[in-house]
Amino acid sequence: MNIVAIESVVWQKTPAVFPSLAANAIHVWRTPLNLSADKIHIAQSVLSPDEIERAVKFKFLMHQQKFIVARGTLRYLLGQYLAQSPESIVFQYTDKGKPYIADQSIFFSVSHSNDWATYSIGLVEKLGIDVEKIRHDLTIASIAARFFSADESQHLQTLPTAQKTQLFFHLWTCKEAFVKATGHGLTESLSREVHQEDCLITPFYLADNYIAALISPTQIDHIQFWNYG
Ligand SMILES: CC(C)(COP(=O)(O)OP(=O)(O)OC[C@H]1O[C@@H](n2cnc3c(N)ncnc32)[C@H](O)[C@@H]1OP(=O)(O)O)[C@@H](O)C(=O)NCCC(=O)NCCS
Image (cartoon, rainbow, N blue to C red; front, side, top):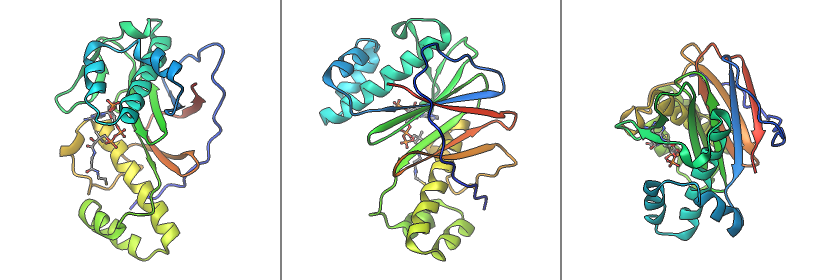
């Protein structure tokens, strides 16, 4: 089992001039998803017809709006890096559902949980990010027994409740971020332990009660954290 200390990071203000990306760097962005009607409308105006179609399929308006803001923000961010308008970006999808931009050298990963979305953007492939709001109503033992390795699951049982909850969400976000970095999605076994030798693991707190993990290739040595919106 590989447990890496969870960092409390400094989130820089949205920059007046957009930061440029170096080959060894990853930019992590976070944005709140509970926005005003005006901002939701602006985000919606840059979505493609298939994204609007996807948004309206959400049963609850709140989920529609969060998807719209998260996807609109992704378009704004990528548009800045690519010097393109947000609406002109064309996403393609792997057969497992991982979005990407064809013929570009920029790579990204997206995650959202409740009131926050987060994005990792870089010039290297195999990026994965995941955020989860910490919940206290889960039966950790049975979820861990089903999805985690035997070693991880047994270790969790030895911990007091608060530590157990924290480690559970740490391992969960690392696994989900790893699955996203590989792009395999649901078919990838989550029982696989994620090890520092295979990739760079950067766990961090996205906000109070939100644990996140970034998985990136080992050559990355510069990670910056920015607020958007
Ligand atoms: C792909 C997967 C990792 C997404 O994770 P999630 O926690 O459901 O949702 P997140 O908000 O973190 O991520 C969603 C984003 O991942 C991206 N994504 C979707 N499929 C992807 C894939 N195959 N690979 C990489 N990224 C993918 C999309 O950008 C998506 O954003 P969108 O919904 O706005 O289009 C998820 O579908 C999966 O396979 N999870 C495993 C489920 C499981 O068994 N969990 C047990 C916990 S231990």
